[in-house]
Image 1 (tube, one colour):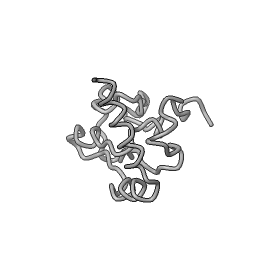
Image 2 (cartoon, rainbow, N blue to C red; image 1 turned 120 degrees about the vertical axis):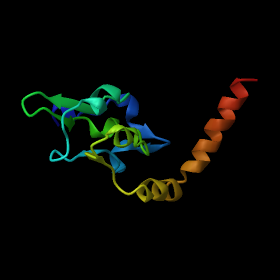
Image 3 (cartoon, one colour; image 1 turned 45 degrees about the horizontal axis):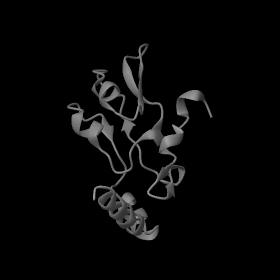
Length: 114
């Protein structure tokens, strides 16, 4: 795997599910992308790089993408960014019993504030 495509280890798990098992990341339509850079500079997870030769955004680290996040799609006023069907995430939540982990995480968070 090239350096660009390596996932940041801190994003290796999502609610107890290995991130590699979750097909959730943006796709850039280079026909629509005008290279404004909004996704590149706004993504807090460093998913995108900018290709200066083609003047386009590229998805360089797809597994860094927060599962369920679609912020870059919303920011893209040119409609160049898309995501898989959100039901993929809902199915993972159901099948992998993610809500059990979330409830425990919430309880721990609330108890630490007491």
